[in-house]
Length: 533
Image (cartoon, rainbow, N blue to C red; front, side, top):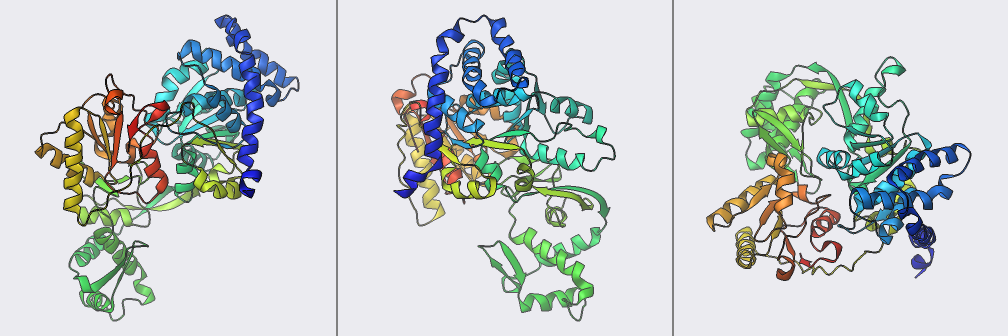
């Protein structure tokens, strides 16, 4: 009860409604403006800001202008709830909006207003596919129509191209690329060589819980130099593969592994040592621990994939391949030895920062997601951001069914495939969520045996992502996906699907994070559509 009274999110929403009413009151007046007059409004707002007027007092007019421009450019007219979300975001809070409520369009309003001061706004997405989609699509065109410049920050850009992107009013980027640019900027000799000349002004983070909570302590590391321990990796890998079950013990909870007294004795015999834990053997112990971890804890097609003789990391939160990244402390080389591919030289850390420390350096930080309320306390304590729950535009009529638990994996997958077959016969589209690449491929084999046509979306075929997602809501479509399809993917229902009950989302297992499960559920039942999960 007390929480209800003193919830800052509720207070913020109450205040936001007053501003939203003022925005809607200007709707008719703004609709009469010609295209050029709408574009000129941006210059007028900039002039008013320079004359000392605050951005808060410009807000109702600015948001009304964005709504009208959006109607003309994207053919989408932001709803009342989207304006509420935009106000919460502009005030440095997190707007919790259900999936399918149009967070992308909501972010345009605070970004536009934030760019009026000329210091630039960074819109942060979880992957390059989404950043590119917005910057080069309708949303980018909307900003350009309003007279703002839009930049796209990709990994492959040169320093000059990045500089140009950072100088734009609006910059679309992934969180990792912003972090690495910051580290590289602090390694240059001359200030003129820095790409982010204006510093860190205002960031609007999409899927803010994924970036600021799940990946908060993920270190971004720039490496240089190289150590050459090639033979040691192969020797410790051979040793790890020769061990019996009684030679090591695994703690599943902490995902750690260590040698038992039997294993230590065996290591001393193999490497001809008197005492394995003597200080002079510290490098060998480190390599043995890495080899054990690589062979008995890390799973191929789950934590990493092997592609063209290269070990590539799979991001556990987004299900995407992280190209150009390596596990640190020699673990990557241990995996290369395990898989029998070419072992690259181990690198030395030159610069490092965590996402948590990086994003706290922005003068103003805000975000949006469908799942943040459970982490509200953490957001407030660490980032000084409140979570504002924004109501849905249309009531959610998705049917969330309880979990089914089976005694064995065989029974579970048989029941899953039976359910897919049953729904496929009537033509209902399905999205089947898996945790690992391996599981998605196993399921695919089972569906092939039943002759059920389907698509697989995982880290191995991410380049077809847009095409697969576009078809996922069509009649009779079956899509198996890792958590790549969990965030930011908008699955539109095809003709005739609503009558069959909408999209059915089936999770093959629970994820470690409840929020990732909720994100998967949220692919169905968007904007008042029917659906089940």
